[in-house]
Image 1 (cartoon, rainbow, N blue to C red):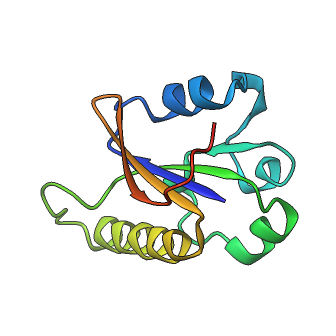
Image 2 (cartoon, rainbow, N blue to C red; image 1 turned 180 degrees about the vertical axis):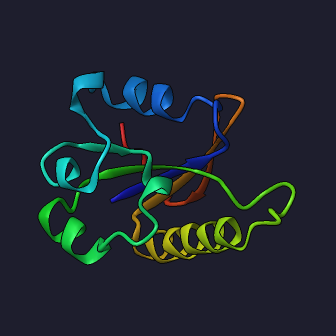
Length: 118
């Protein structure tokens, strides 16, 4: 599994599609779709994802998640809890991932993994 993180609008999906040669129709936008497609974009919308079930079904999945923990801390407790849940999910996934990259301004920074993946 590969985890790609970065802020909104930083080019994460474009980077993954260019790197892999996959097309937009091969991108999942829900955990159910992600069991059978190679890329799952929008992970931050599913902070209570059963990652064990998902990765058992699709161990080579490329996960893309917006960074949501930077910036001003929201006043709304539910928004703070959501950000915390997404952060903890990403920590668990990063620990399991073969490779973790952060995309900033369309440029990749490898955080984990030294083997090329293209």
